[in-house]
Length: 236
Image (cartoon, rainbow, N blue to C red; front, side):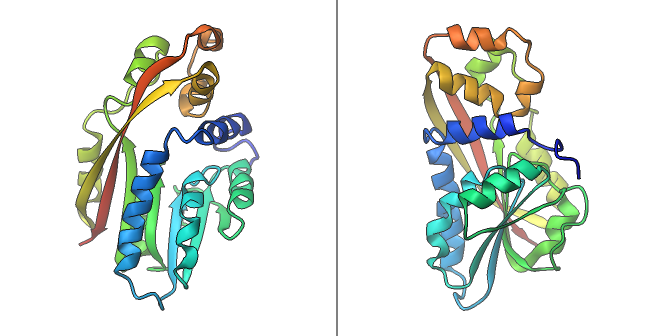
């Protein structure tokens, strides 16, 4: 697979630096709480695999590292970007990581995964259904319509698909049932550097005009809101 497939090193490093400021800590805490709830209900003697599909540089798996007291727990991440997998492996040394595309067959056995994390990443409904155990959980994180609304107005960021939650629910409805939705609203006060990292760390960076970075550098500290939904699915 070519080195340039998936997120670039620049995007990954910008994301790493942005996350280091704990701006999205309320979201990672929400994911961690939901994962912990499911582990609490599970027989701790069973081998338990958590797979982050589209793991990026490993931030969200890293937040789960301290639940590895669960004896048989394995944290695993996959990404199409070789650079992302290398960063994730360094960040989560006790995890396991591999390069793979979500659009093809994921190289894991049927019903081998207890929790799939899918955070701002493409989905493969067939593969998710194949991989999850009968008692497994699918946790999807999506942006809400007002996510970074101020920045969309100022910098022309890509628009968020309307009715995203309902479209995902319908696409998964043959196999999965939506159990809970958890909204997360995070007020953000961004420095110039935070703003630049936030703009560079997403696919928006590929579509912004060249003068965006001058505008970001000249902007005063800016306020906006990060808005997400955590969708919790289980097999029907």
